[in-house]
Image 1 (tube, rainbow, N blue to C red):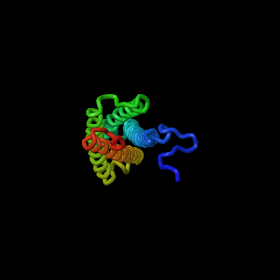
Image 2: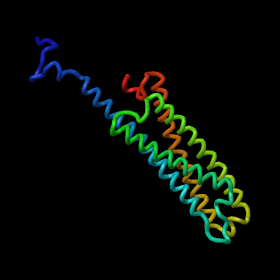
Image 3: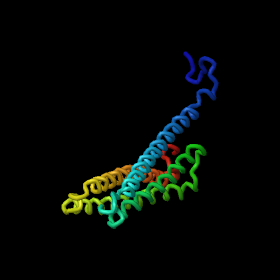
Image 4: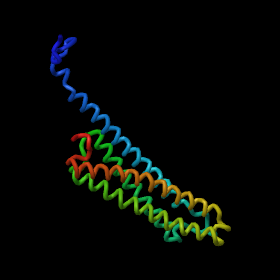
Length: 194
């Protein structure tokens, strides 16, 4: 009977070590996790930029209302522009993490920065969308949307795109929260290292 420690087919002790295989699996999981976060940030950027552009171009002429005449629509534009800029920065940090395999800032600062800003900007988009949706509903009940359907339709599109940006940023915030929880429990932003 063969010993369980005997080597087969030219194996050496180092080839039976599963540490390398485990680290490859961990690296693949981390790459997938980071890719998902990058995809969510890209979607958030795309929708918030589209919302800001739709609101910015929502003026039909001298007889039509202008988006900047309404506080809630200005709030939608500014909130989505801020989130678009933030998303570009966060996509840059994701690419940095892919290429350098380390965070842009110290890990403790990075996880709290991402989580805190994702939370703040998610609520910013939600409050802007809610305020503008209430205004748009009020405008539909009055004469504004009867006389200027295109203005109201484009406002509704911008508001809807802002809500979509909120959803993607909220999902990204969930992943950032997962990283914070892992950091608090294990001392690393990924539970896979422990």
